[in-house]
Length: 268
Image (cartoon, rainbow, N blue to C red; front, side, top):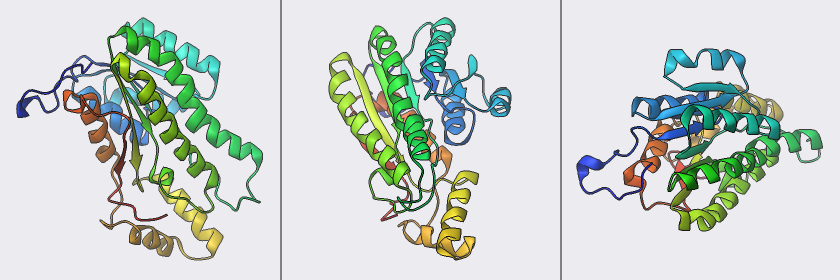
């Protein structure tokens, strides 16, 4: 765990080697980039995911001490996951609350209550369920870090994606509250706000939105990029780099922050 301030430039990413880290939804997408990056820097990893296929492939990407099938919105799954964390890692220094889903695309009068609840259950309640089990372990370790995944949609309103945006706004509130609650125990809590992440998930979102407004996929994609100052999507490894920074000694005095890794999304 990182419990000291860096003393020189050579210490920039020190403190990661041997950290015990849980990454939720860590077998694909941003979670896979985070887990593989932390493993390469010497962290000890447990990951969970809901995909059997993705979990089976984890060993091809990085070394994890355990890869567990778990739905973070299911309390029994989370309890079982943390039993594995305790038995394999012997404790915990950091939690990466990464699990979430895109949720439905549609007007507020078109979205079903079931889809609304599912989006918030995974992306917000799931973070609570994991944090409540992680915090006693991180306290016992003498301090550490929680990094929760929000989104640029947690800073901007997002028309026709109301469940997703509401969930990501909620992550920021949860993060800021936990930072105040846990700071006296040496636990840093931060949120990362990715923008438009390269990959199949955003392509599906763009396709759904394009169909809704009656334009082509390519035209809708260009509309998205026009709203980013750097005019480019974000790589999952851009996000992973920020996570590594926050868990390292370089992140010793950073807490309660919502950090955009998005090329400066101007609006959604």
